[in-house]
Length: 568
Image 1 (spheres, helix red, strand yellow):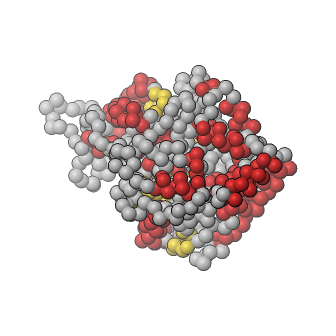
Image 2 (image 1 turned 45 degrees about the vertical axis):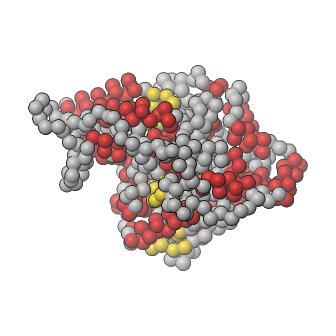
Image 3 (image 1 turned 135 degrees about the horizontal axis):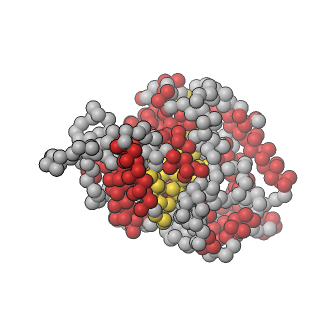
């Protein structure tokens, strides 16, 4: 297939918060004296000092927790209890967790502890508290996608990804909130309600995997499993200051879940690991990755041999000043790590936008309408169905009116949202193949030679205010580009919006631009992230670059605490 042009270079040889009251961690030993001093939690890295205090448990990553549990310095049960305590305190403000299985989780954690006490070898994620996006089946829990028509549904068994996590020892605490039908970047739906950002209750944590990102950010979970069709693990990670990865299209099995659209092979939804640290994302990816697909360790990557193309603007929607600065900071971090970094420009961004909306809307919204039958529609879903369901003459008139009144972004989306026949769909697929081929050739022809990675923003602004997507949707092609291409792409936090750099957006009549300006107002202190994309099957290179950026920006991690409203 032509879209694989240029990927041969990177395909490896096959290889087989506010502090909360939580139970204080103890040194988990078979013989512990009652009169021993108050225990202190040691670092998972034995040479690191000073010892950590109890509340720092909430800031530990999944790999750190797994190491402490395996060594007996923490019990899986106390870690599970600690995470549940965080959720119970924070979830009333967040509405991130919508289904829990605490009793089962405690029992599974105790089984991990019993295995360790017997001297058994533990699997890689043994005892690590994990949460799952609401649409992925977990036995006995609902999978609704925010649809009232599915409120009574209970999964008869675990989906294969969830079963895989359990085999790896993960302790599943429950399921997290989503956007209705997973099709917009705010986590809100008529069934479960709205999910709030960890730092500002007037803002969204993103979507559609927003509940996962919000819970990870406050330390209520150590690992999260989401899905990504157009940015659904990357946008929430960027908004909340956590890490995530959309793997290469087709790498991970995606079974046992509610999906929209069903059978969309040109732009398939992908499972996406999420975590507080890049190492956690890699650990989860490694557990889920089929044995038949090579996945070298990110630590095997020689940073001095990587060539990185950097862009601050996707060519469709202008980014905020802080977003641009975050990209420059990340580029500097990669240069310091030894990578060759050059400026780059996304080719033909309008075609990428047209392909994303055209391919996903090729059925004219028929699949979405079937799914929504019997359910109250979220206003953003209803808006999308209205735009996509117009006849060709009506759509043409709306496009013309949008352009006359300066609504260029709306006109571009309307131009792409149109159903057709099978021949129309095949022509779109042919255009997608051609775009993938041209894109890879452009990467091959950079001034520095063939590029390995691309570095840019994951989204044009910091976290949206609630309801902003009604006027701006997901502006630009920052994340959707890599769904069209099928490339792996990950997000890592870099910085926070500084006072004075919230916005430099000119006053325009375009409603998407106006909405972006409103989002940017009062955004100081919100997380800023970057996106690193690699060639297909080269997740290890993207993860290596993300880890280098993370090391260089240690104070930019997950959000702590719930602040006041925007601007306060």
